[in-house]
Image (tube, rainbow, N blue to C red; front, side, top):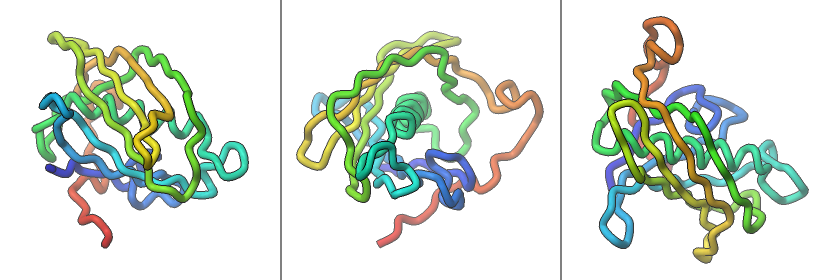
Length: 162
């Protein structure tokens, strides 16, 4: 598995964001051999919705980023295109416990020059699907998203903690 970079302050993947989810992303393949992005994370008390459960909005953010990042599969650290959510449909199937490592998987379904569609799931440790999402995403460079030329602070490969 090839690890994708994290940022410093993104709410989903930022490793220096004290309230962030600190999701780690890896390029892998589905059982059928298709390119797929794997995300690993554990919700902490600050991500709580109902007692002992992750907030649905936090889970939506994680799955949204997992699917959006799938367009960068194989691009390495020099990402020139970003998946920007235009539409996202979610379905919640089971609650996700806090302080338990769970995974998400995202993949690109269709693509053209300007947009792509993708889908993904969040899995409980026993393999049960807790959430599904499908969406449409624009492909844009960071300068078009932010309206200025910017660098990504802290955007790099971070070593996994043991």
